[in-house]
Image (cartoon, rainbow over the protein chains, first blue to last red):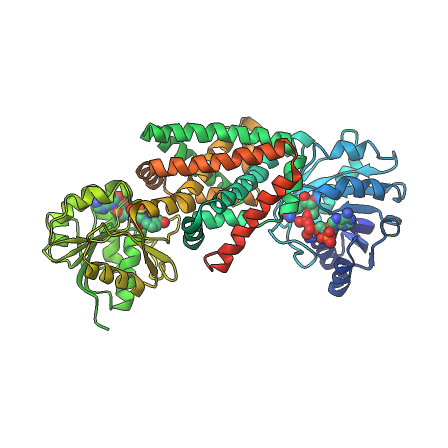
Length: 294
Length: 294
Ligand SMILES: NC(=O)c1ccc[n+]([C@@H]2O[C@H](COP(=O)([O-])OP(=O)(O)OC[C@H]3O[C@@H](n4cnc5c(N)ncnc54)[C@H](OP(=O)(O)O)[C@@H]3O)[C@@H](O)[C@H]2O)c1
Ligand SMILES: NC(=O)c1ccc[n+]([C@@H]2O[C@H](COP(=O)([O-])OP(=O)(O)OC[C@H]3O[C@@H](n4cnc5c(N)ncnc54)[C@H](OP(=O)(O)O)[C@@H]3O)[C@@H](O)[C@H]2O)c1
């Protein structure tokens, strides 16, 4: 088929942004012309070296001016400011999107400043690695992964349809959800696990002397898996935690309730209660494998 | 070199036990004759089919009678009872060992029943997978992994030396530690991570209706890593949690303190405190990689 868009501009060609550029380079039917925008000269130089875009610029105004689709792929903490700056220079009829991992606190702030002739269809591709920057991107990063689509109320159906088609052409499965439902899901499947993983590393770091160094030395597989999660970029996670603060704290509270129940079962040596809880854990794992996401 | 032992008897040829048998089959210098003992006929039949031992029996008395080295590889909950049964039939001068993941509550109970002419040198190989049974074993499971050696006070140095040499010939690095130091390390690097992983799965399982099924559906990488840990055998982990109850609960308390501090930093939007904590997490990860255990 013909490309979905004429010109596509990616702001922040890091892990996610450069994956989209790579995908568009290899498939051709996403967009005719590719623009990469970043504030960092070394990022732009690297994008040029890798040949990921037809136009590479540090000027937001210049980069978005002719774009039919603008996708913000900057860190969560920079999305709002960058969106408002981009909107001011986008042409009428153009489509704005972002890929930020948190929605409830972000979406309404951008929607409030949206001119009537620009549609805003943010998404969250549920894919990633613990690496970042333009070298970390992969053309097939989104293959068979979910991409949640989170349009504000009143967004034209045609704009939503085009963005869904775009992500499907990137290999993803799409699903429309509301802001707050999105943030509840992500608090459970991603933000809380990262919160706990960072915290278990912190706990180990605070052990004293020999025990601390031996814990590092003897780290068995359980601990290694945790630290792999905690290897992710601290700035990114600080911003995600802050942006999804209320829902994350509520999810943490649910988790703490379960921790307390399990600790009580253990303290009282209630073998049956412990067993039931451990079997639930296994059950969830089996469901995941059945869903072919594991 | 010549084999370290004449006859080696493995009680419970599951993941760990059959890995030792496989190693002894491929290297030859561990033991001359291999005996496999189990209570389950289907396990014995499988060990025979795989050709892992020279003698396969369901009789503990028969199996250990001529053994120079007896290694208990049964689940934590069965170690004490099986050890006492084995001791009654072992020959003078023989060596008893086990591989249980918990020590403080187990060691003294066995030591109390030990005749003076049998040495007891338990170990804990820090290696494993989430699989179990005789088919799960691997000849190189212990390669480059740590094996903690936890002899009771007063154990003859020669017995300790022989057991360390045995594990080194299995590819492991050995280190002597005390009961309680061992249990503190394992509470942090293995038992607490498993406790949390099972509990996060339980938390997800208790979500209501749509959210629960969508969480399973959209599980991102953070959650997947957790569920992988929680895929381990519930009976094994119930027994480990119970056997290391006090130290595990104390380690959990330390963890909870850090969770509370992180939650407070988040509630107060204290960016600096959040950042410092997240960076510690990354730091621990880097130390692990430096230790080449990751
Ligand atoms: N990583 C994941 O697993 C994942 C998954 C789904 C969604 N997301 C979302 O994707 C977005 C990007 O994440 P990523 O992992 O791709 O990060 P990344 O690899 O660090 O890429 C971000 C890029 O944006 C640039 N940038 C930062 N601030 C900017 C600004 N104000 N103006 C223009 N460019 C700026 C960065 O350059 P400098 O580094 O030089 O500042 C970098 O090139 C985030 O919103 C994140 O929530 C991430
Ligand atoms: N898995 C790990 O990651 C790991 C790591 C280090 C140490 N360990 C320790 O290694 C030991 C064994 O664990 P594993 O993972 O190898 O378990 P496994 O694969 O389930 O093997 C245990 C074997 O012992 C048999 N068994 C159970 N009760 C018995 C009894 N009363 N008498 C004789 N045989 C009995 C089992 O047969 P049935 O299944 O038919 O009962 C099975 O063949 C545990 O003490 C564990 O703490 C495990």
